[in-house]
Image (cartoon, rainbow, N blue to C red; front, side, top):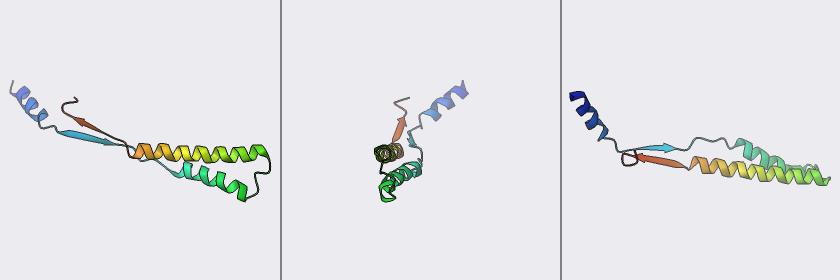
Length: 83
């Protein structure tokens, strides 16, 4: 019985735990934006399909950067009331 009482007193000292977002890699998003932006400067967008593909690279790169930023700044806090 004494062990049970000690466990109960230890759990009341619990205040909160904070879980932060994971460290994301921004390199794929930046590389896609850079490749899509450099395609017209390098003369690779003479064909409509190549121009559309360059814009798709830019949009996907911005999407990857946006998702990485959301994940970096997200956090959860667990308190004893939530448990």
